[in-house]
Image 1 (cartoon, rainbow, N blue to C red):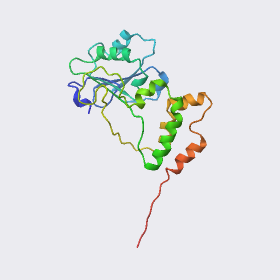
Image 2: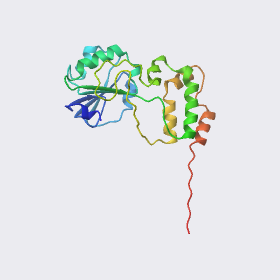
Image 3: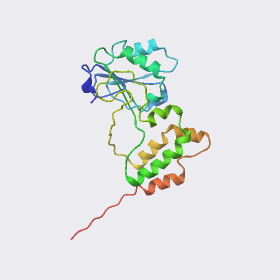
Image 4: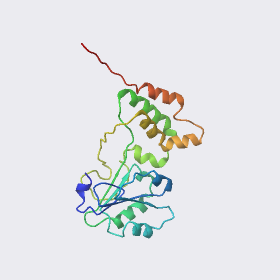
Length: 211
């Protein structure tokens, strides 16, 4: 969908598959170690101490990037600094920036109730920066011209189907920054009791017969 918006497909910052070259970046070296490898994807470590000019040079210079994407992360950024960098590196004309995230998952009526209670319990431990996320990016500053896929104040609703195992659901919940923050305060948001309640809503069943 996004690839169809950019006239050229030479370089993307953070996205894969549709571009000749992709650069994925993160301030955390440990995060990069978990990144999926791909022959057209190059990962770079961009510590907070790196200057804007150094980062622009690593990305190929000004006016060199066709597409910038940020999934489930832009709310953590220093937005004025990041947007300034984006405006420097995006190709003109034709370059596109896209950011997206999710703040809830829809699985089944039974499981959704348990997950919703988990998120409510986690609310006191949320970082204030995640407020943009929980508001569905409706209040996120986004000083860019619309390309028809959402705009400042009016994000485009997305449906992203994904098959997920019970372990996958647990990994998703454990990855929440609120879980880490709560643990630091001696609170286990994913206690044995919560996990057992989740398990009872994820039981499989079947009927079979013969004549």
